[in-house]
Picture 1 (cartoon, helix red, strand yellow):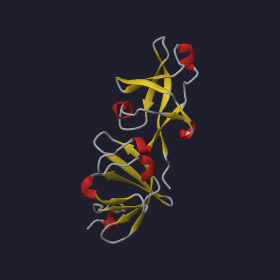
Picture 2: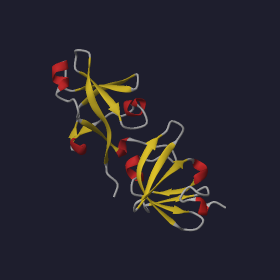
Picture 3: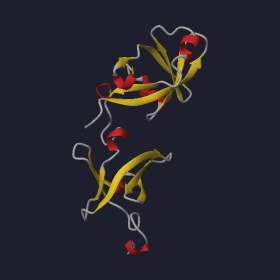
Picture 4: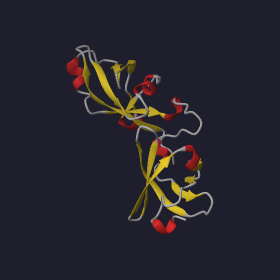
Amino acid sequence: MKKQFLEAGRIVGTHGVRGELRVEPWCDSAEFLHRLKRLYFDGGRTDAGLVSSRVHKSMLLVRLAGVDTATKGDLYRGKTLYLDRDDVRLPENRYFIEDLLGLSVVDDATGQVYGEIAEVFETGANSVYRIRNGENEYFFPAVDPMIAATDIEGGVLRVRPIPGIFGGAEDVK
């Protein structure tokens, strides 16, 4: 089941003396978070009271209701901010990482199951899926020519692997 509220970033400190908070984004960019009108604490149970936000370098600077000094802002250091998935419209073929984790990875041509997505990380050029199958682990580049279909609701990622990516030399023809 999809989580309604997703981790958006962590407050890492204050900016200036008026209580503005520095947020390390855990999504594509600070610009992505800047477009949101609301953020939450406590897994989505508490509205954070977002007053304003702006992008500064790779961070998001936020003002929260009632936080008007650096001393008050320091009380929020280390807290995780959440976003409501209903407040976000993702482009086609873009997904929340949270929704990709645990998907079964299946060969589109043969139906062979290679494992489940255990982690997604960025390399700069593209995302890479760490796929785990028991003790075996594979790294799969998430590039369009190698992804046949992503079915979040069905729990399946259908792939078109290049020879050898899921095994040793015996798989290479």
